[in-house]
Length: 297
Image 1 (tube, helix red, strand yellow):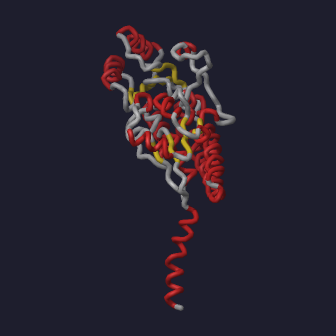
Image 2 (image 1 turned 120 degrees about the vertical axis):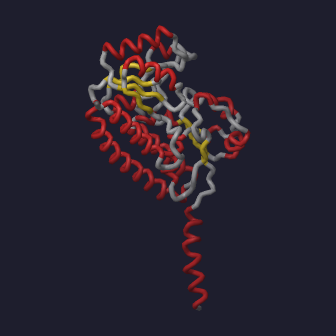
């Protein structure tokens, strides 16, 4: 009897864990999306990430292991073709297209239309939106809801966990959002230039003033364009200039040397952060702290 009781005490937690665990194979395209999915799956399973490390989706090429990952996936979360163009053709070969969840189609998203000069670089005639949707916390919450509902549909036995995780994600994000508003309040009114136009949602949500981007279409700058930026920094008394991990720092250094502007780094895709459920929150916090530290003189 004693041995039976000991065995029960030892194995009961394992049985409980097994009942919660899911065999669901979930794939997420990029780090911010993967982080939100990981938060909703916490305690049930771990999603797989396609674009790992400091790779950017803008120039990513699938490896054979990635192709196999997509083939075996029960659910694939991505933003859409305007962000992860490298996935358009591979996703066309996925047997069950209903397994592909395009999060940029989530209901109630706040979307910002790209300026006309950037619209012209896209084909098809449809209105193109800024796809850095996760940089508005409200959008992250809407996407988290879609993610939770999709997981529940495919794994109903863990509905309570997914629902609770979505609630916890929203609560944690609301608390962080309030903290970041306080951090960025002194920056309001300061003029900012960034390396490329990824921050429209973040700028609008936190009432910032980003007046220009160095490479709005990731096209290499010519000497005249570079001089225009330098002149604008001086004439409009721009407070700070930001580059990103994959950006050529020599261009930034050239601008800084000629203008004396304070330079900082922003990582809107979390390229330098370890993947996982904490990445999204750390990404927002890092953006806010870097802007505050470099723009308040």
